[in-house]
Image (cartoon, rainbow, N blue to C red; front, side, top):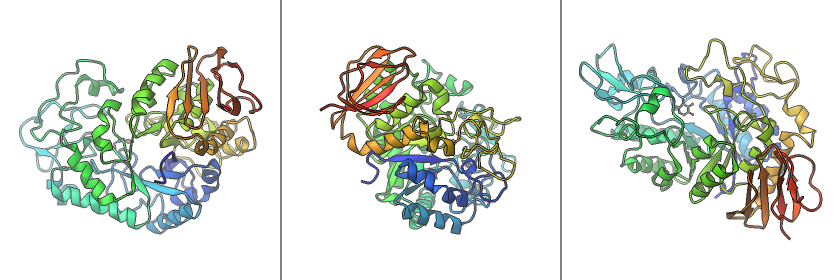
Length: 479
Ligand code: NOJ
């Protein structure tokens, strides 16, 4: 399949490229920047939601799953983008958001039976919403409680109602008919919950993946990941045929197997959240390499690669992301080493994620070439860090990302971890390539590795060194 070992580039449309000066990125803007995407060498683009939305959750609260929000353009603009993307031999993935809608979606009033309701003087159970507060809110008009796994403006759909399954299958077919090549599926572990709405028990241990404040006080035994989740997954697969389906399953690696019986890949969030130390990374990877994990180190929710790993380790982190076997997701801006920004004052996203959503920095002008208007979120440091300057600099993060992507097809199948010095993560790929990454701020012995193919700092030439410099990584090939 085309996605084996693919690199998918995550476009956050609001912040990629504005074409009409309103300060918000749009579809014609994305089309105008395809040279950059093509030169990067990725295989596909994933567009975070571009559907009509009142923006309570920045596009993940949708009022029409089969339309484009006018701020991003029109369906014609979308069709033109699909054609342009395909014309360059790239693929396009949409963000499918099947778990909930906006509370302003017409279904909420016209088809209330498509949502999950409870009667009574108080909520039917103790479930907590992901961003805090009860997962139930009273609808003023009907006096009933509706369930929302996220913000109160995002009522959960009832996937036990066959009408919901059929409606969402129509959405999948609608975009496939327009030519898209697959979907990243949002919050897919929330599709089915306990039909008896039993209480979640108190958390007995620290969560396997980080959770926000109050949400971490419960073990989400009944509110997510129901034992019959595969019924819902099967419904999505039925509509999608052989299109690529990548699941946003916010569960530990050990819980991904049922999802992977229906999806092609699922994000490995244990890797995204792992501390930047070689031992932990190896343990997380060894467990996930058994599965069809999609590698991701950053996104619009959890922040940027250069901030999580620290700017000094950004290059080795990039090399790690791009040398693992399977599908890798690269968040726009990480290829130029953007760090998280200050966000917005007052915050636009109530869950504090503005910092990871600042505009792409194309050139060294103050607005970074993102817009001719007032950007919806400030541009952080375009004069110091931008794609134009890095494009011609062989020592830049952008050059490293391009070179690593270009090398992927030569790495071969399989991965075997090598015993290496403390702080060094080293593995051998099927074709005899050795990847060695020093996460420490001091030199460390390098594993035996043959001839250099790629180095994070300094150009490749000759035999791989016997020592890795501070925060240095390389790919070399054994004879
Ligand atoms: C995951 C999305 O990536 C995030 O931005 C959103 O808030 C939640 N799912 C709810 O849709």
